[in-house]
Length: 280
Ligand SMILES: C[S@@+](CC[C@H](N)C(=O)[O-])C[C@H]1O[C@@H](n2cnc3c(N)ncnc32)[C@H](O)[C@@H]1O
Image 1 (cartoon, rainbow, N blue to C red):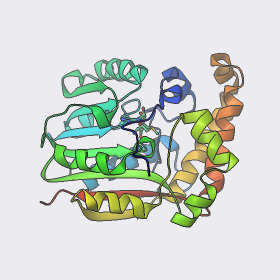
Image 2: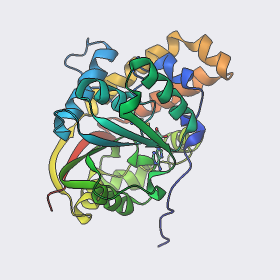
Image 3: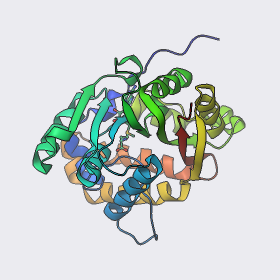
């Protein structure tokens, strides 16, 4: 078996103009599952509920130092800074996300609480045991070497700190093997992102345990991601002209990818939140 590469290239999607994501995501530009209290709840409210749910799982009370791995357009770090006064570091390899976050942090008056670093987490030099909590929402799917990522995250957490991971997964090993090279999976992986591997939950749990984490909670958020993507699909349709002005055919490409994603939930794919404690 060949060793997993240290990191993968995914910027072709994430480094698109941040305004593209402004056209179909919620106002915080959170690019991961929301948490719906009811199917009728607006996307923006459901995304805020999700961020409160993450804060709760991380045990945030105020003033903690947090690391968000794969910070996107800063939804989590900006929200936690404003709501809980956390000092947050966001990391991702997509430079345009960081320019956007710096602008938003200034507008929200939280510049002193927010810092970001451009690069792949796997090869980033960060001080050991320097964070109270670490989050990874939709980013571990882009990282080829699970063991290296969990081990590194563990080394950065203080004793007693928590790691929150939410990720899309194939439903089992057998489904992973059967569907990994199907046309829909290939389209999303190659044409949209560049690299991604939706491992079954068991692989994430085993990776976390091998790194020495103790599993604190696992929640099934599959129905919430289905509803989130329905809202994104509707937003893409409503903004099709503006999206196509960025790149001809972009609206159809985004709709196709979102429809492929939504077709699989519960049958081939699942979406889980995994909470890990650094107890020793
Ligand atoms: C689906 S987006 C989720 C963004 C954000 N967590 C959210 O919920 O809105 C995945 C994020 O992971 C980042 N990413 C991909 N590969 C990465 C890596 N090797 N290290 C750190 N971040 C990475 C992408 O740039 C993007 O910001």
